[in-house]
Image (cartoon, rainbow, N blue to C red; front, side, top):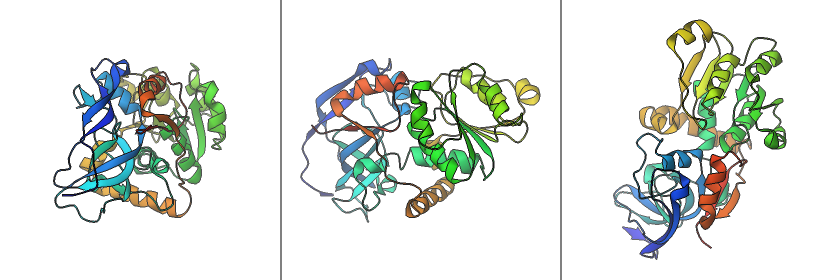
Length: 335
């Protein structure tokens, strides 16, 4: 195993229960893991925060880790050690990827999941490249089949994935209807959304139908869940409308087969990026190839997350859970 100088312990955020982010604590003596065959250890420069981190803390993430565990799953940093059989990832290379235990000074990644950071980008610039961007691209194109001239309704448009979805949809030539809370409307308008609606209004579906002259949205990106899910079904174009569900921040939502046949005859698809990678690696490869082509074309640029020290992670996650944040959020593991 090839390594740089690595300490035996590190600072990390440890989740001690499945009762929410209130039980996330900073520890200073977490053991630094060693890479096994096919793995790399990275010295984390920046860790991405995602709503799935809240779900893991609450125990609602399917097959999520059991406490106590080091929280976080997205990070970027330099390769500090490589396991047996790893080639093409030299020590010191800046990479971004997803794995377990990202809210820490060091993190293990599968070598296959370590994506080199684009030239000229910093580590924090690359956050979102393997989570938010591919999720938005898969939702809009691979599943949503969005084409120029169509209308897309994007929920949680001010969030990390929502913002990149707005940018991608505009690039694809779609009319974008973005839903967000009023305090976040300015951020969404800055992304050139065509219409910005209050996500909390009870007549959201009716307003979408009004904007589309009664047709409904061709594609709906649904990540809110709860009562908003029914608004998404009602806002979608009958028969040909595609509702892509990739989140449930507002809780579970139920729909019956009777409703899908008679009340909301639309196409409903679930999207889980982890399942996509595992079950359809070829599709995921195509998504990443398209993403890097968009980087080369200048459509996708460096991320500019809001940065916080690792010690503020619990507070930031509480704000994310309360839907008080805007855009991409990141933690810096070193003081």
